[in-house]
Structure formats: C-alpha cells, structure tokens
Image 1 (tube, rainbow, N blue to C red):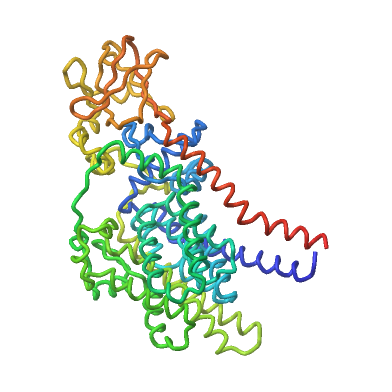
Image 2 (cartoon, rainbow, N blue to C red):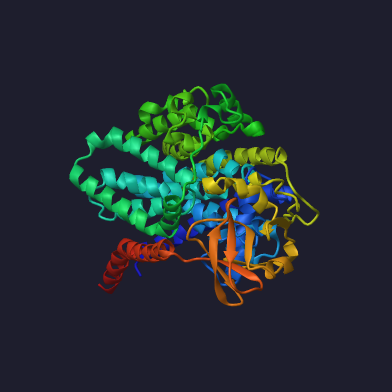
Length: 569
C-alpha cells in the first residue's frame, strides 16, 4: 500500500470519527429531556416501526398488513406508504429493549449517514474538503431537519432529507458532467431511495428537478446524451422502486380511491413572510410555524452580501434556496395552485427541505473561503478558525432544538422510556384510516375501527382477546365467528389483496354491502385472513431485486476491479 493511500485512509478515518461525534451531538438535546417529543406524526410512525419490528422478529420481511399495531385491523398501510428506509430504526428497536433509545440511536445513525452523503456529494462537485465538511454540517444541523425529527416526528420526510442530496448530485452529473457514464445510475437509484422513503418528498424533488432542467437545458452540450441518460435513470428508478410502486399502482387501478379537493393556500396555520423570519430566529415551533434557524438566516444575509464572490453553482443554489424560502410563506400566491398536483404537498413549509439543502452548499462555500482568506499558512491557525466555525454552527442549533423540545408535548417517565397512551388513537382519522380506503368502502371505517363484525345480520363488537395477530395475517377466534358460515369481518375490503382460510381450507372472500371484508365457507371454525401475493407484488419484488443488484454492480463493480488491477501493478 502506497504512502499516499495510507495518509488518505488515516484522514478519512479521522473524518468518520468526527462525524460519529457530530451524530451524537445531533441527538444531545434528547439526553437532557429523557423522552421523545410527542411530535405531529409520532403515534403514526411509532406504530409503523413497531409493526415492522414484530414482523421481522417472525422472519417476515415483506409486511404489507398491519396486524400487530394500528388496532390490529389488518390495515394495508405498507401498500400505500413506503417503509423500506425505516429498517435502521427497526434494527435498533430490535436490539435495544428501551423504545426511546431505539429511536434515538436511529436518529443518530441517519445523522451520520447524512453527514457522509452530504460530504461525498459536495466533495464530488467541488473537490474542496473544507467546503464539503462545512456544507454537510450546515445541512445536518439545519433547523428544518431537526424539526422533521424532533418536532414533527416525520420519519419519512426526515430520511428523505438525508437521501435527497444523492438525487440532486446525480441530476447535476447527468446535465453537466456527460463524461461520467454512471451519473444516470446515481440519479435513478437516488430517486428510487426517495420513492421507497416518502412519496411527497419524491414529488417535491421531482418538481424541483423539472424546473431546474427547464431553466438550464439550453446550456447542456450533448442534449441527446442527456435525454438518453435521463430516460435510463427513470427506468432504473421505476424498476428499483417496483417493490412498492407496482402494488401501489395496481390497487389504484383496480379500485377508485377518490380525489380530495386540496387548497394549499388554506392549509392550517399558514405563516406570512415576516412570521417565517421570526420562526427561524426563535425556534418555538408553535402553531406549525417552522423556519430555517439562525444559521439559515445568516447564510441568507451573507450570501446576499458576498453574492458576486460565490461560484456560479452557489449563485444558482442561493437563488433557488431564497425562492423556496419565500415560497414557504403566504407571500407567495399559493391560491393560484389550489387543486393542482402541487397541492398534494399539503403544506408550503415542506419546501424548507430544499432551502436547507441549497443554503448548506452555499454556507459551506462561504466558510471555506473565509478560512482560506483570513488565516495564514499555519495548520494550527486553520484548525482553530475551523473549530470556531464548527462551534458556531452546532451550538445555536442545539440551543434551538432544546427550545423546540421544551415547547413540544411529550410522554415521559422516570426511566426515559417511550410510553404510548392506550387511547392515543382517539378516532380512526388519527392514523388516517380513511386516507388509504377505497371510495366505496369509506362508510365502513367507523365499524372497522371499533372491531364491529356483522354476523347473522347483527352488528357485533369483537373483543381484541379473540383476535390473534400474525405476520401478514390475522386470526378471528371468537365463538360467534366460528359458528357461522358467512361472516362480515372488521377489515376494510381491497380487491385482490386478501385470502381466507378455515381449518386449513380456502374460503371465499368478497366485499360486503357496507365495504367490509366478508368470508363465506362451508366449514366452520376460526377464520384466518392473510395477505395475498398477487401478480403485482411478486413482479415488484423481482424487478426491485434485479434492478438494485445490477445497478450496484454497474456503479461499483468496475471501480473495484480497476482498484485491484492498480494494486497488482
């Protein structure tokens, strides 16, 4: 091994160690409070993770029905809501007995992943280690990322922000670095990770990339090659995401889910531009007033002052970040976009994820230039100035996160464990049961939520003691259920999704008049309802496995082979 390679390994080992320390600092506020904040989506996401945990413990790694959580309704949430990047949270929940610490370590893990991804992406673009380091710190310690994690407890959007730089780097490479023959793979797999994480984040990123493509397409040199690479990236994205997309699309084809009138301009607690600025400075996060934090505001100001000295890419990202920041308030005429596809994002403040990423790149460049311009050649002097900038980025955000947690409702006890109130879901809308229910079955939601079966024409509330949860299956053992040939169960009906068994023999499944799943058989006894692996789910699993294996081989295979040859020489 050459001396340069040894020095490189040593340097990156130190960098990874620093990232580990920074990841611990990211979750430091939780150590003080000893509880998880009861964020907007906490009950929803905790049940998602616990459902995956119980399935994995039973060696089921394709859990489509929620039978252990969500009131044991055999609710097919995972068909409509991607879960694949929650696996690290599930892993830590499995090995750590305390629920709270499983999630806390999961947040730290993704902070480390985010620091690494951001650093590598910026390093690939700029070849500047100092800018790459500070850009990654600016991003992971951005206020909106902390809001997603600790105030909103939106795990999907939080992980989506961690992954997002991969997609943007792939897009940048496809457009302007035609010599990189692997850029389309990076873009395709990066977007696939977003699809498998959070659909709304995917939509926001896709719309942003479309706008950037439209603006900069004239500057693209080899337009034919760019179109070809974009097409290939779309195909590999669809193929790699098929494990989620195919069952999702299939269900939307075979039944009607309805469309809701969405008026994004009237989203609850909209904030004016002045309120957005103040929310960024005080971090109280009351009444859904979110911002970009003190560091974000400083980058906004300094970027404007030193705009002419920024690189062309930083100028573009500064403008893009400022536009998305402005659009996150009511100063932007959102009423013009009511009832359009853009309304699906629900809340304008979601655009702050883009602002945070764009400003992080700009902030990294500003700090890198400041260190280069205001220090001498002394290594100690540069390290001191760098440490000052690092502290200046981290300490304010930790303080703002502390304030955020202080103003967030919580469940807590003396051991710092997460404890869920048994009545955490006050009604079926609490976990959006109606959101993923076919239009014709909407009327059955209240019955299903209360475990009301219809037996011999009479509505009967089943005891949860007579409902046994299994991976992708649920068994009804109530005497009333066992003694009748035709039973309407407290499960919402979805076409081609369920199969039924009685005493090991198949039973007929059909939709009752009110939209609940009904079972008819010549046998008597307990009824077992299981997920049915239809053509879409089987094809999706195969396509995703093939695309991910081939994609990773194409991405890393040649590099590894070339490295081996160089070492042999």
